[in-house]
Each structure stands twice: as structure tokens, then as C-alpha cells.
Length: 215
Image (cartoon, rainbow, N blue to C red; front, side):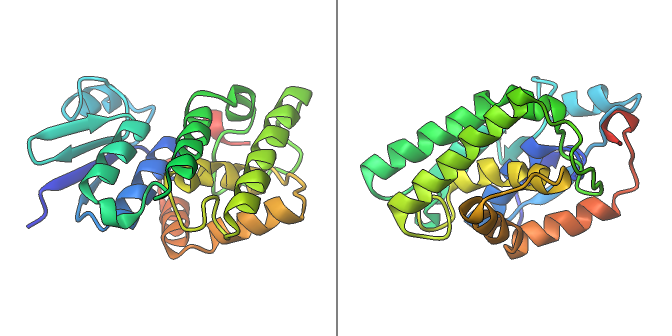
């Protein structure tokens, strides 16, 4: 019996929903999905039925309600330790948490100027010196983590850190950002994951359009 519900915003636009969904999916948690489209007259009222925060995503697991993508990821990692959502080695785990938190709280110029839109292709749009600075830092993280782990993902196998950066990969492809060999290779790894491909397909099939995020 499924006793978990993951409440998401539009798959085409919501990077935070994608992060939580990837982690829940990878963990093996059985959950139902509820998608609440943003920017509609009943959006806020509908979200409040699931979480007092008024924001998405939110995971309802039995009697427990967890909101915020990072909190959801941590909760699921504790529920499913065998899923390896954090690296097993302590130093790598600390680094993974650090770069995940950096993504969670930072890179505001990239997020403002290159919003996630998986249906769109807008090469060159949104690029500023500040955005390029964010991209330089992000790709340095990818390069350094992959070099240290020796794997395709940031820490060898898929972890929460990869979920945190997966929407960035989508953004860079949408806006046609030129990637070096290492960043391009990592982007391919992320986009070739079956669960990422499933999300993208569903995002592109959504009927909702938010004009502010269309270019």
C-alpha cells in the first residue's frame, strides 16, 4: 500500500520539484504524485492543503509532512540508507553536503536569468557576466568532484548532489551554454538517466503555460 504522496509544481518549470522527485524515485520509495500548477487562482489555497509553508515540493509520508527539497532529500536518505543518497566515506559525504547546500542557497543570478523551461530552446538568452560567474563556479564543482571520485556522477554513483545540480544541466542546455569536455560529459550522464528522461517527457506533455517563463 502506498502511504506517501509527493506534491510537486509544474514539471516543466519547477527545478525544486525535480530535485525531490529524483531523490524519491532513486530511493525506491513508493509514492503517488500530485502536481499543482503554479500561477493559477487556486494555487496557493491548494498548496496549503498539503503544507503550511505554502511552497512546493512537499512529501507526505504517513503522518509526517516534510517540505523544502533539501529537507525532503535528507529525510529520504535516512529512510533508505541502502540507496546511497550520500557517499559512504565521511569526507566525501561532507563535500557532497557542502556542494548540495551551495546549490540550494546560491547561484541566484543563474536562477533568475535562466529559469528552468524544458520545452524551450533559447540559446544565448539570459547570459550576463554574473550568470557566467555562476556557471564557472558550478562547472568547477563538477570537474573537481568527478576528478576526486573517478566516476561519472559527482561522487561516483548518483547522490543527492547530482539531484541538486540536475536542473542546472537542463538550464544550460535550454539556453545553449557552451560546455567544456568535462561539463558536457556530466550533462550527458544526467540527461541520459532513465528517470531524468521520464521527467523531461512528462514536462513537455504538460498543458500549463506560464507566460513569465516563456521566451
